[in-house]
Amino acid sequence: MSRARLVTAWIWVWLFSAILFISGCYSFSARTSTHIRSVGIPFFENKTTRFGIESKLTSEIARGFMEDGALRVVDEGVADSVIRGEITGYEVKAAVFDQNEVVSKMRVIITVNVIYRDLVQNTVVWEQKGLSKWREYRLVVGGDEPAQTEEDGQDEAIRKIVQELLARSIETW
Image 1: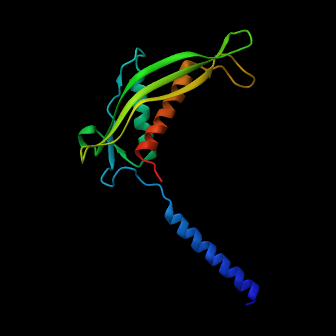
Image 2 (image 1 turned 180 degrees about the vertical axis):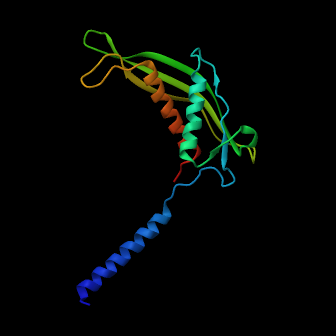
Image 3 (image 1 turned 45 degrees about the vertical axis):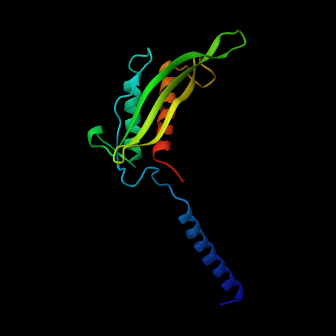
């Protein structure tokens, strides 16, 4: 074997070893302790005048956890952990005006208070008050983009809340 090929082979061995070593340094793992394998998600309390938002938000949170699969979604009575929350704000307001001062986009803002508890050790894992997520939606057709509804904005704001709760409860470096 020529010296150039030998050096190239050693470089590849070294790079492969370095990649294996580095990949062991970073990993996704549950932020919660290993004893937490399930989560209960009772209906969020609705402190707003927006009827039904608590059902939609709670269902989407449960669906997000089920799709993620890191924690099983179970009844609170048998769960290792629980996410409790309350919807403290729901607001729809004008966000963008056109040149004639006509509203072209509205913004849906949803605010929640959330607490994630370890039911095995009876401790608070994390708590967030005033978590607020929003989404704008188009009232008028713009180019190739169709008009949207308040529900479109609401769905996206809820999706952002679900992502935040998943990230805080499950994902960490």
